[in-house]
Length: 234
Image 1 (cartoon, rainbow, N blue to C red):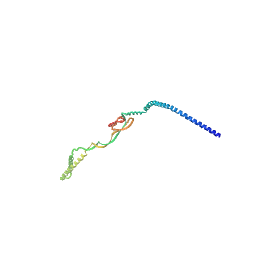
Image 2 (image 1 turned 30 degrees about the vertical axis):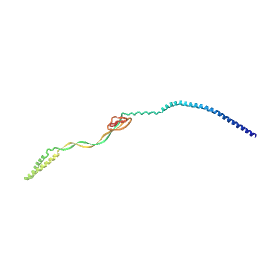
Image 3 (image 1 turned 90 degrees about the vertical axis):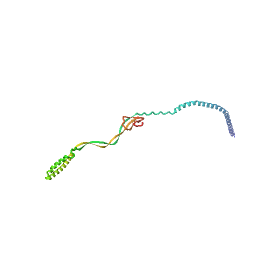
Image 4 (image 1 turned 45 degrees about the vertical axis):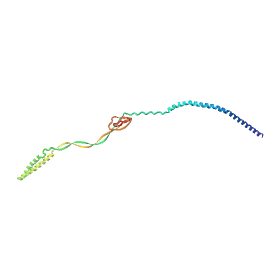
């Protein structure tokens, strides 16, 4: 029983001491709170003023530092490439004639030998007729006698005259000579006509081909990388 009372008194004393301690701490906290508030306000004002001054001092530096950056980031205009240089002449490497077939005719003449009849002196063949009549009459006169002989002579003369005429005609026809005559005729001809030239050239380090109406020399005029051909619009 005594022990219980002792424990209860100890516990009661401890609780009392605890209550006194809590009351003292609360009193101290109420006294120190206004001082803390008062002391913190000047510190905050000073901090705000320092921050504003630092901001104003840093603003010109920021502006000054930003200008070179802006200038550095400005786009740079690209330089125009130089115009290419072209040669004033193209060098001719070679040329080949362009031909086409043309059909035409031409006159060909050549000498030939011909046989001609000699000019006739006695066209009516009187000489042959007379000689034949004489020979025929003599032969007829040798046949028969009396009136028969006369008839035979006349018949022989007529037959001889005809025979002499024909004999002279044959002799005149065989009287020929050889002569030379010029004879001509039209013959077809196929010829090759040059209608142009296929030209190989070198210009500005490049080779090409072009058709030209006439055979070029060693070079062809050029401008801006193109040939100046006769009749062109360049």
